[in-house]
Length: 633
Image (cartoon, rainbow, N blue to C red; front, side):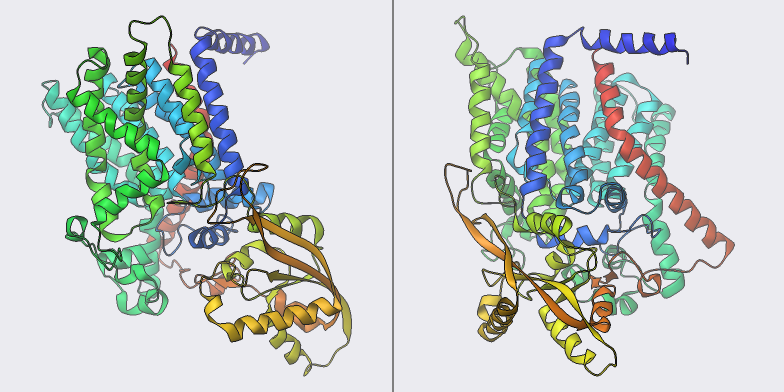
């Protein structure tokens, strides 16, 4: 394209942007607020056990030609994060880049989806309410749910748009985004029947035959593009079973194929024998909830506790749309009724299924997101009701109050999410200290009272041993001939006696052994760093409320060691069945060897889909901006 052509395109984009300067400025400001809040969360939030599981499984995932991980039957988040590691290095922030990016762009997608059912003002409010939603913000951690829901939300928007515009292109794009969601996390599969039912409802409402030839083609296009992104998981399990006689954890649990062989790998995992408790949804199940509370109630309460304002406003919004005719102009209310139908169908399968088998708050993020347009409707309705007959609009006042409430709520102790928003966790601080101060050839010794997953993550790219392994290696090295040399050694002590395990304080002898080692190391070395973080069970607001507690002490000493100890510290570590970084490949238990031409073709096709999915994931935020641009035409 010529320089003049480029100038013409840029000029058109700028003209388009400034056609609606006020609303666009609001939306961009909302997006930036949401991004900044999620950036703070990505830097500061502490970690969970799953968080520490996934960050290490992402290391070298793409370079190792992985398709999925054994427990997720998916791989897009891992591939995306592994590429981020390669570009920016391994830090707490880079491990959370996916939820930071896709969580922020979800703000724009909820605006676009809301515009299909509500007016501009309500849609802007929906974007604002998601931007400051505490539960969504506090899920900016190294897990897949925020990313998966970005793709689901985009797929929903494109699906609704395709119904209104009757274009095959949008059905294909909706299928692509739903496929990306499924390759990120498996449970978005359960949104497919929901959208198919909405398709049937929409056609029936508009007096169209559901099964006419054109409609069947639309659905086949939608399903075909979804299927493309299921190929990696299907191929992995087909090839793994052909080679070794078992499948990954989720396929084994669902289909029961190869259980006898896979038991040696998966039997320790609760998901290996997990069964849906359908009766427990209503009548409760003490296996899932100690109190025996109904499982559906427990799942829904996660959102109430994590984001009470959007939950309550969302429920009120549904009731206002259904029963209170004076709250809003009829057009907005009637469109709201259409969104109620989409909302009910969207949660019809995924909510009871997840609640019946796995009660983890993060999995119910979809409920918070899908309630937010109703919450926005309530906010606008309250404003209209109070402003009626007056010459003053109170919406900005309400927005300010809600924003302040969210900022306060983010500083409270965790109820259904991770702590602490306003102060950086010790894990992030340790990684930063290591990267800035510890040489690549220095040895790190970690207190055994630090959860092993945290140690594996914090001390990546350095020779590392726990205290028990260090003592054993040092003793064994005495039997090996060779000279000793002084090595810079950093020892990380868990000051509070239990840094993530949850049961160390009940083992006084073990605790004393660590205290003894700490005292011994401290006498020969020096304390070089003290690391603090906000107290978990108390509110924390910098400069105003709350205290920090000392979590980690870092000691340094020059220690005479044989090279055998350093070599042992450099050996690959195994975490949740995989050697970290998937090296050496011979020790990866679920690697397979394609033999026949068909198997080689299946493998190559699956790897091609991984690359395609990764490219589309990186391009998807740009596509959202394109959709936003088109929405202003």
